[in-house]
Length: 418
Image 1: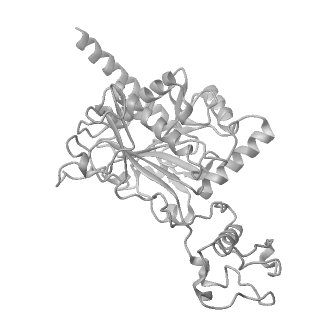
Image 2: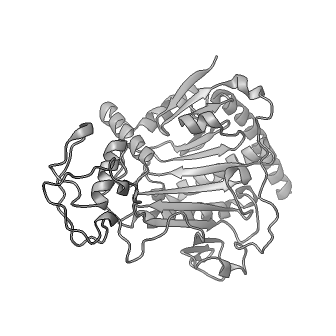
Image 3: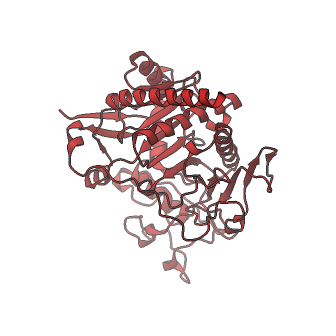
């Protein structure tokens, strides 16, 4: 029998339908990108093929250009770029959850003076008086060369005016974290010290971006394999920072704040305590972190890692915690690679967005999910997911495989010592 589960940390509704696991041709082939035609732009000697670095880490510290071990560069094909001097960003315009309020706010920010208190308060929306901003260089093209509208003239709403479709400026950055000078395909190919350097670069760049006054949101992510969106083989990850807060991130923040107000505790802290009591979905446990298959996993074999003690900001992790976290993530990647060959997966770090929720209510977390199934019409149309593997079954399987992986690592360590 199918059941529906809800995950308040991701705002996801998931249908658990294990009977569909036997559906023919459900699994997709996890192909890596093909052999490179041109020299790898991430390998040493090819630094000129990327923009100048924003960060370099070496054994001697940071920004050692001759002996780099981790190199962070702006994405040459950026999804988000910094604004130029002539660009205008309506800083006061947040992305709101309510679509009608969002439309109204965007219209008011882009076209000051076009809305006034005399606008009919239809659709149940409140109108705010906006004085004309003569310094703004954004103006509706339909008014070019015409007189300013009089008070008696009816103001157009976003639903009546084609200028509603005018885009809003977006500020931020898009960076690539080149995880090693070696042309390796996976974090599992790196030694632990190097993996720690990779996660240290995440910490430093997140701290940098959140120190910028315009930045509201930043996310670190990694795509491995063609089904996961990877286009280059050389092991790398990415960071995107934006000046506007994604609506679902804001919505999740609001729910976390409401839970904290109502119950006096962080929602994730309560969930962690329950998971540790039940032990049904726990995959691995360290001194400071727990890895588990979420109760409402969106995709089969999804793994979530959370700090066992409350932490809201990833970039404020202590050095010893960062090293422990890096080792755990590397083990989990090796686990997925042992379970699914070849492996395609994504991982993301969800840290607290600026001004979205208090530090007491938000708990940062890490998501790792293999790309084993195709997202089809239902998922795209409904925004919900169908998971064919119960998280409890996935966690049990992962624990058994992790036990074998760790036994193998201990054997190789003893053989190397002898």
